[in-house]
Amino acid sequence: MSRQLSMDTVQQNFWKEEYLKEKMLRCEWHHKYGSVVKAKQKAKAAARLPLKLPTLPPKAPLSPLPAPKAVPSRASSPTLEASIQSEMYPVPPATRALLYEGISHDFQGRYRYLSTRKLDVPEKRYLFPITTSFTYGWQLGPPVKQELVSCKMCRTESFFRKNGAFALLDPRDLAL
Image (cartoon, rainbow, N blue to C red; front, side):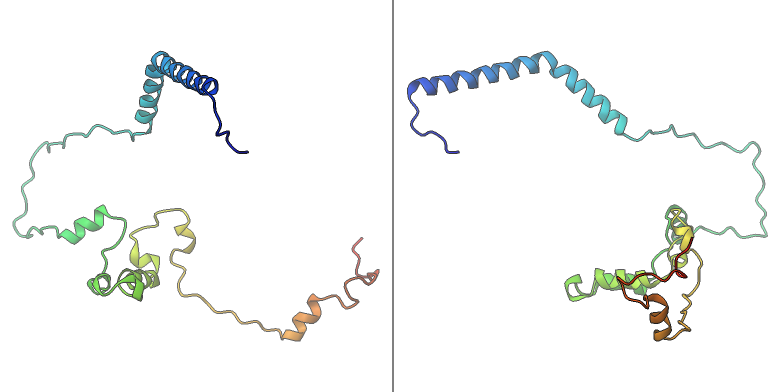
């Protein structure tokens, strides 16, 4: 459907009046309901924010226990602290170095790092199963290859119908 290009002043004034009416109607609606809509939007945005629990102050020990002098105090290493905060074990430096060698387009860099990381079993990458689907494959061990004992002709003869697709069925084949 094509647009009329030959518009006279009557049609132009009609469309101008329609446009102004619609504009005024939108302004009136916004003036009447705009604050209500904004309040609802703010309430929805506040509901989407995660609930923040108050932080508890650290409890002071009731009586300070004297530290035994025979046992030297161990300073916690940064890798131990990182492993406590993270769900994954730290990446070995040799594997991490793959990130900085080449680009993914040439099957190096990030591509090679991810393909190398993917080869490790989940027990070597994660501290514990994160999702429930992890538990299905957790600590399965290496896959066991099962070989078929039967020959190809045995499978073919037992799978296909002997009388053809449209032949009448043998009464002995029907289950009653």
